[in-house]
Amino acid sequence: MSLSAERHAEQRHERLHPAAAYALSLAMVAAATLAAVLVDRVQTIPNLSLIFVLPVVIAAVSFGWGPALAAAVAGLLTFNFFLIEPRYSLDVAEPANLWALMLLLITAAIVSAVAAQSRRRAVEAWNAADQATALQALAQSLVAAKGDTGAAQACAAALARLFQAASVVLLQGEAELAVAAQAGGGELSAADQEAAGWALAARMPTRGGAYPVEGAAYDFWPVVTPQRQQAVIGVTISLGEDGRPANPERLVEIVSGYLAVALDREAYAAQVLDSRVEVASERLKADLLAAVSHDLKTPLSTVLFTLQSLQKFGKTHDAKTRAELLTLAETETARLSAMVGNLLDMNRLDAGAVVVKTAAVEPAELAAEALRSAAGALSGRVVFNEVSPDAPPLMVDASLFESALANVLENAGKYAPAGSKIWLRSGAGAGSGWIEVEDQGPGFPDAIEPMFEKFSRGVAGDGRPPGTGLGLSIARGFLEAQGGQVEAENLAGGKGARVRLSAPLARAVAQPA
Image (cartoon, rainbow, N blue to C red; front, side, top):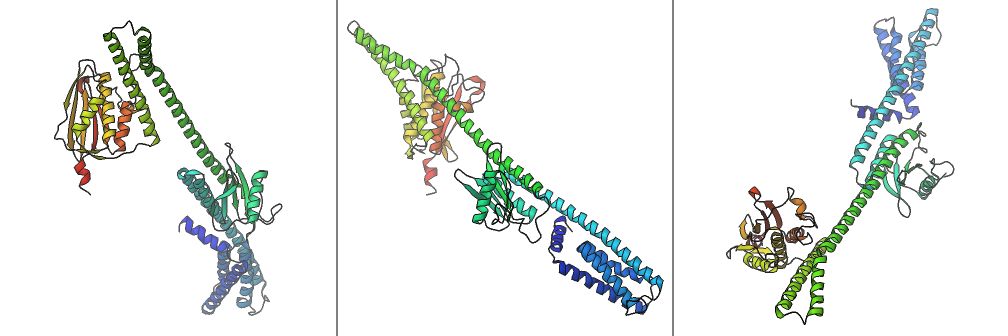
């Protein structure tokens, strides 16, 4: 028999009414008497009295000391009445038989005492094993519990199992103490709610049915954690038929300790998350400030200088000089506009405000428009547009895809040396098409993935190319918003880098419909 089955069997005996235990003990004595009388009629056995020891042992193991002693006395009387001369009388004719009866009583008493003690120890062992199993299950449940409510449910279930009684766990919310979990049946009355609040306010346990909460059915214990999390646990153990269990505080303290750790774990996790969000926010602010202060300062200063020069010395400048200054101002203004546009695009991505309207678009059209947008950054580089006019159309949002491709082209133009070559190619396969940009620049650092984060630069220091470091991040955000992806790799031998923008083919999307 398993430990659990033995424990359930023992609980059934414990719940047996005392009168029924005594009745069963006497019934076993009657059965032993009948057996002894039948055996005595067939054959005379000197130690026939030992048969009355058997019901004493069974009663002691099953029901305890009281029923066992009753079985011993009843066995003594029936043995004397039915089997000792003169029979059918309680008189004892021979002194030897009197000593035999006394010896039977003493033997039965000793045996019942030893058996009852063994029973008590077995019950204690079963209880201890069951408690250890319940606490182990509680620890495992708390590891997997999600949130304060999950921890409360695990603790309520453990208390109900430990005490075989209704249990409840209440958590302190922003306004009031609320029931978070219940187990074992039972409902909280208004008196119970008041008792739980009193226990938490006074930081003292209360007992059901006793002052100062006579109307409450639950015993309550307050739980206050180092992180000031507050809870109350309750169990219906004071109003039961079998009485209040001995020293329940030991188990309650263990469960309340587990609950306190679980509640603080959630509080610490929330604090860590808040700290990470705050650190990320501060880092983003610092990166944005660095981008604005370092990379937007130059075009603003150039535009300001150009306008001041034209205003103060316009009459002395010849037509060629004025044209050069205006071209410089236009170039820097366009560069400034692109940077601000990138910042606004990233804000749209972070806010989830990117509206995607996909349609079938020819890759050649996307490439041509992106080249026009990135013409300034590609100046001084030899660009080969090898996107085939016959390439299958892509199902994309043309504006978003062109913006992403333009950002990748501008990124290549910034890092590729003057006079180097940049290729723009297309292809298709496995239901998706792609356009890739290949350059002869220094390539990406060893870790490519961080280059897709906000404000990441391929070159550090003041000698880095101008920009906000958002190009690749925006490109990936725009592509993923329309079901595509961006992949990057360095060319073999450190001869440059390749960035590929992939999106679903128009025909591949149209076929299922």
